[in-house]
Image (cartoon, rainbow, N blue to C red; front, side, top):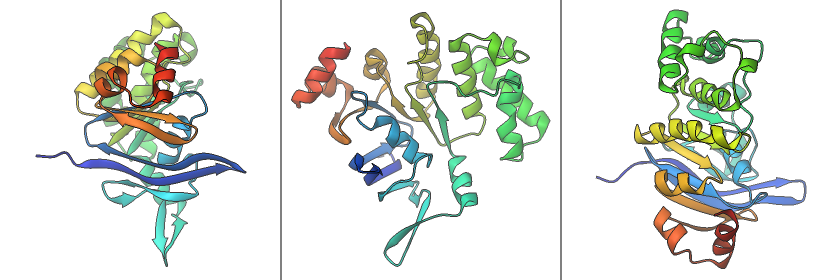
Length: 255
């Protein structure tokens, strides 16, 4: 039985002033699969993630999840931005993990994880707390529930950030270079959590420079440059037999 595409990105364009950042990007991500986005800095990878989650608007194209257009609705042949309440509700189904954790410093680890489910999902406090403790166990930090972010290492903070995103029970997770701000010895603990998520069937789009992770975990690898997808395929295809000179050049510099 074929997989169902969870996310469909069709002909997406994004401008910052006169700068054309995304130039008709198209990408399909199957339910339960992992897509890794590779490419040099400035190629549009992070912008694409932010457009999926409507942290950035798009200027043309369409992004759908389970067949429903995200953030926009078509009327009279034109795309119009949805009401903020609808966008916020759609966004709850897409977890996002950033480079720099973005934890609330004045809340404990447990409070960071339970805040959104209680406010947005209307989860009861006891249920939200129980789920948060399960997630902390999952990311190996159950003993840190009373700690504040400032007392944690970067790797620990990033694992809390992953748990916080998972607490909303998202249908897909977006990771924007989640290990790039970490000391090298802390990278492995975050990648392990991400591998476990992938093995558990979570749909993931990961912007990363961790080539070994992409080779091992990704179902598809997408290479971007200058706002376009220049090549995509299985990890074996991209890493062992890339077709584009630009892909080969990029991989030579990051291996």
